[in-house]
Image (tube, rainbow, N blue to C red):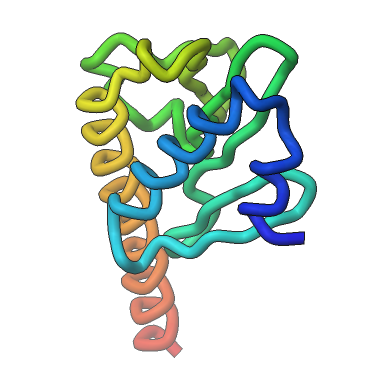
Length: 127
């Protein structure tokens, strides 16, 4: 099953929300990769974000949510790592805020990758 297959199997009222969020995610960087494993999820060096649905709304989950500033005030959740944005209608999608959060999340993943590479180089140089 593809992500689009999944989206078109969802309730009609949620499909435009899912399509819009998918578009925002894929437009955030040409290096973002889309996957499907029960729900659509996206990677950029590592897990980046995912889309999930309930009967009444779509959730955009940010995998590194605890590391994001949430200056936009739209991230919610009490999890130790993941925070999310709840979208109940196409008209209420906080497009600008989501774009900003996606860019910040890309940077967080990029910095994590650079730190990982630096530590690996240091370890090899010590041997």
